Length: 344
Length: 175
Image 1 (cartoon, helix red, strand yellow):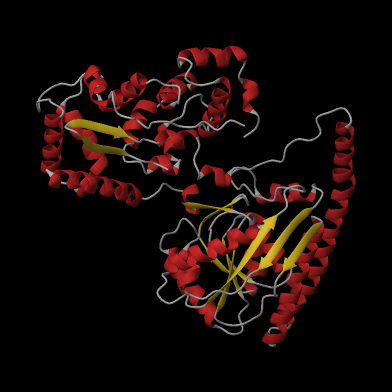
Image 2 (image 1 turned 180 degrees about the vertical axis):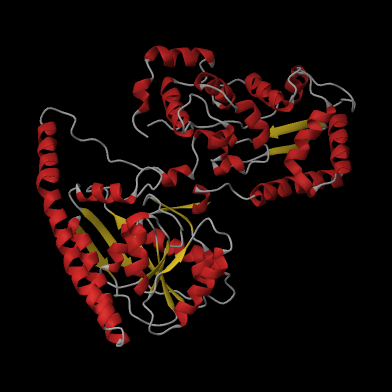
């Protein structure tokens, strides 16, 4: 953390005690740490283990990977051949269509999970479809969505992506009631807030899933939650997700790899093992601000998943901190100085 | 990030150590090198102002612009030398020298009233009037026994800060 120059008067001597710890943050800072990929320690470093590792590579790339690609392709064929008929033919019968589409999306997500040999343990009560509730979870990669979607067809709020992901977003995910936003548009926020509110009110809408961190974090830390999800005036159900790093590091470092590369990496690893905890629904306590509420929920999730909390806004990945922070420091220092002046 | 310490030879480490007057141990220099490479995103051998500003904790510091002027374009050896004032092994003299350099923005070896006022302005922003700033500074200088228009040199800084406990230390994480 940064501390600043402090004027101190001591026995008629001018004391300029300097507590600069800017050096501290040049050497190591708590923000970059959250987005650092932490690859597991190499264990194949000697003459006995190396051949074993090579064998492992052969098994993973030569046997498991083609098998998984096959499973996934099969899954897509089944999904698409059921989805389009349902989507077009049952246009009149909304309720049935929605039910079938939900089931199909859950199915394709199960296929995805199978294609990584996902071993997912769900703890806690299954999410129910009720109005006036919203689900929040910590974010490590886009696969978080798939992992959760496998069990319950959530409507999620996501950044609109380019490429094949974007195509999927605009066709299939749209029918689930998903909401898209664009980080770079500043006016976007009000529109999105309105859409969120509308969605939560509707009783037939799929339960809404929000990742309040706003960006992928490396599953060791949590960054500050955005308050948008917490000022909708409804119950917030926290979900904690923790991946077991021994099998694969599921962090999607979007600066380093595209989503396709990330998926391929998962498909050539042994397994994706994770724990999902559905935690107790929380409500805004009387006298609590949305920001305090968000922090409280972040606490609950971090404790459950064993993550460390960090006081930074995830969006600082994409932009500079606002001048407000600097001004706050200046203000506190100015107050100290004025105090000294008055003492005279 | 990768294992960057393999790019530094023993000769390199010793050269850097000599340049910073042995204020950092060899392992610390290796850690600093990893950090340097991490900050130097485009790998051009020095950290640009932009890359420094991408560290939020640095960007919110009121003195960041001033420090950037001193840090901009430094290669690794100079970077370590710059940080040497913050090592636990650095002498008080070295720390005071660093502080002096921060204040002496035109680098002529003398700190004027206006230069000190500049720093005070950076630190307090718009939350205090210019007149109040001048008042405080004049008072502080008088208490230390200096007239308003005196030019302070490093020896003066050493005298004033000499018997204070300057907490200017940074721990370099070593794996």
